[in-house]
Image (cartoon, rainbow, N blue to C red; front, side):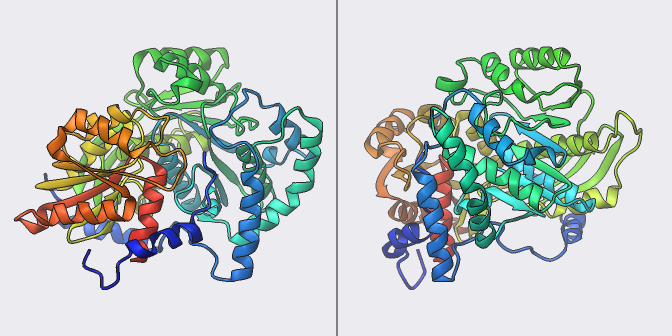
Length: 499
């Protein structure tokens, strides 16, 4: 790197200080720049940092430490008994507001952020619950489009703690890390109070802790193979688990799905007497063009067309997420059922122009360009690879990859192989990160020994990747992609934004 100080030496301190996580082409110059300004001035980094006040930071760490003693997010017991008991003693806060519930394999968080932006643009007070976090635990619970403050996070935990302990004492197993956070989110939303909650499942649907809401709109983003040890070995089996969020009489917004998954989801919708809107049928993308810093869309919603929509995110998959988000918000407002009209086009444009999705093809450095993307399974990796090929004219792209041990690392690397000139294998700060030697062996199998570099420490891996990228004669055509896990992205984001 070209910075005066070596950020590698500071990285361990940064991780200790800021990431205490649960272990578990046509460029349209004319028009796009103007459309971007509709979102107003830059909103700053949407990912919060640690509190600067030492006492506040200490108090937040104490809460994180207490939460870390509970079951992590990768240990599940297929039941909503405990979270339902917590909701009961808290006075059913999740029923104090209408909800939009989101499941699927990939695209959930980006879609949730888009839905939140649209609802907020129409002057609704929103609560958003997503997981996992990129850098700081407070990211998971947002009010009015921004993560709650550390103070509010701590206060919310202290408010629900006596009730959590009451349920712990009654149940066979203590509430898990994710169950407590879910209870906190629902309580925070009721306390705000919010006009609408946008809730992303943690895993699956039927038995997910979030599934104690009766959402009027259920959203299913694309389903693919992931968490197969818990959700099933086929997309149909996974769809059966995820279909559990479809409630009686709801509206179901379905992204494009594998045929067997679609059949399962449609069957569940019929059983629940739910109204279904399918991407490519009732709504979808009319046109899409690459634009400066993102893409220019014409979307067909449930009520009609929305043209000249600027989305400051890269990749066709984000355009699909936008179509799904728009349909979900239309359904929330009754468009396509009670009302045959479109939402106000200027408000829709303004909302999409403001959308940010940290860690999703996010540019964090230039010369050479360094991108971060949280793709962690083959489906997500293929979408990311397509997005990079479309939006960036890299003549040489170097990958920096660290995956989690329970993921399909080979499938992910195979998806990236066509676009990576070389790959640097490394490890992130999560104890569940794939062993470097084991991941390197898989990489050699996919890329060949000459295209694989091993650097066990992430700062060294990024340094090596930037050096390799800078070897490109056409300096401006080189790039680096850091990917493989949300933890890899979070660690890299801390490092590169601090350096």
